[in-house]
Length: 285
Image (cartoon, rainbow, N blue to C red; front, side, top):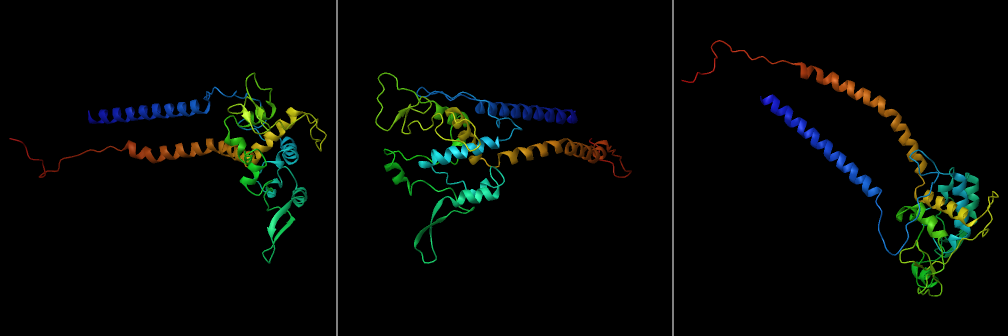
């Protein structure tokens, strides 16, 4: 009787644990795929990015072109303070190319005597910021300091889709909407009024590899570059996931066999209690 009660309680706990786990997974899925309702901006379309699959990697050629877009267009106002030239090595550039790219930049530094100087960049330097501080950035942009783009692709709801839609979604303002000088109307930006005028135009730059620099191509490439900059370990993470997934069946077999080997003796034991003569329990009168 007692054994049946114990087995029933174990079964109930297992069912409860299963229901809790399923509910938790359902909640995580719902939160990840939820739609944030808002009445003052348009939600971006879900685009088929080449790196969006669970086992997909970045299109390195696109990332490299995206850096060209950032360097020639975005870097005039936006910084990437968490990105260093060493991150380019063996990813989107060779070591020699990365060194040459760093040497083109002028880095503010101090010499041995403490005097301010400017020197050519090296691999350990981060990408130079266009302004010395936020107040200078705001003063040069109608009071709105351009945000740092290092983590922007992961910091905004919609990620790459949001960045692409924001760069290509400039429209004429609706009737009755007043736009101040230096601002623009973009339905993908919260509130619709953005302090950054349209920056990308067809053939606005020239790609080194000869790819036609249409506005959508530039937006696609710089979106890929921004995602790579925010997550440079993206491809490595997925490679490790594949390796671990390949090992799971072997580890599972070892663990199941070990469990059965250890518990088979314990579960097969039989306890038999015998009364020793002279040590009989007292009989109740």
